[in-house]
Image (tube, rainbow, N blue to C red):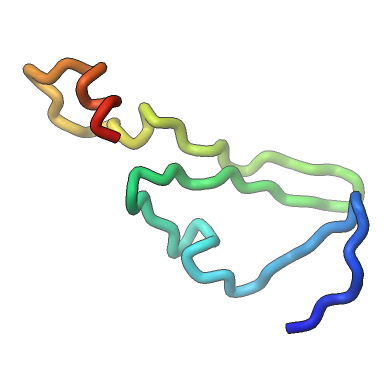
Amino acid sequence: VKLPKIYKGDLLCLFTAGAYGSAMSSNYNSRRRAAEVAVAGKKVILIKERETFDDLLAGQNKSGIDDKLVRGLL
């Protein structure tokens, strides 16, 4: 798809972006999900914060495993 010239400050919206959008995103290869924002006029609202490394480990049973070791593996 050929796009017109884009300038600093322009907004670009990609519809049906597949795995690049939150609905189809995954944590494959320990990638954290991106933040999400909504733009209304000149107002930008953070809808969802970017995942942290600790978010990836949430819910994992790490009993008996040194946290530094786990971080070193990823």
